[in-house]
Structures are given as C-alpha cells and as structure tokens.
Length: 125
Image (cartoon, rainbow, N blue to C red; front, side, top):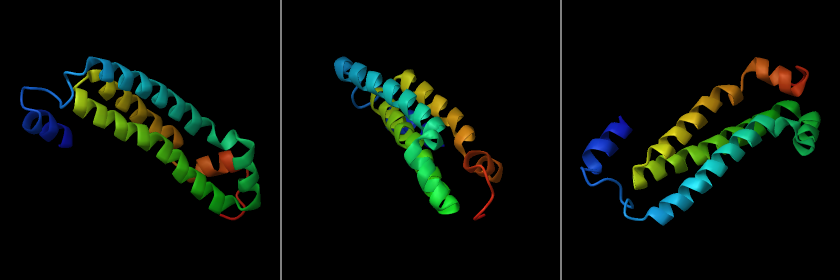
C-alpha cells in the first residue's frame, strides 16, 4: 500500500525528487549495491566471528538475542535506504536491491532450530 501511495499519488508523473541528478544517482546506486552485498554477507556470517562466538559462550540466550537483533538491523538499514533511494530517484535498481534484501530475511530470522544450530547447544534456553 505504501508503494502504491508513493508511486501514484505523491510522485505524480514527474518522478522522484532527485531525478535530475544523474551523478548523485550513480553514486547512491553504487554505494547501495555495495552496502547491500556487504550487509547480506555480514548478516549471514555474523555468528562465525570470534568475538560473537565468545559472547555466546558466556551467556548463550542473551547474546544470541542481542546478536540476532543486530543481524536483522544489518539487513533493515540498507533495505530502508534502498526504499528511500527508489523514492528519490525512481530507479528500479533500488527496488531490486530491496527485493534481494527481503529475500535474505528468511535465512537470518531467529528460530529455535537456528538457535540450536548456531549456538551449538540448548543450555540457557
């Protein structure tokens, strides 16, 4: 519903607010492609970092909860920025990057099975 309102009501037929800035669009698009790729990689590999593993060993449930929230935020921040980029530039690349980020969410969504697999045991549950 948000996309329908933004696309058809707020943007009229003139496009986004910054469609006349091709250099800025190119820079933002390049940065968002890199940010999307890095955030997906980091969110998938977060629990393999030694610092995170050490915290999980000391207090499994609390650390897993904290790092799961951070993991989701790693995907949500560039998702929001891609939606903003689409709204500003009306460029489909930002929408595709947002779609790719949305497809990554099921792979990092914290579940009981993922907790057991990533922490390695069920203590503290």
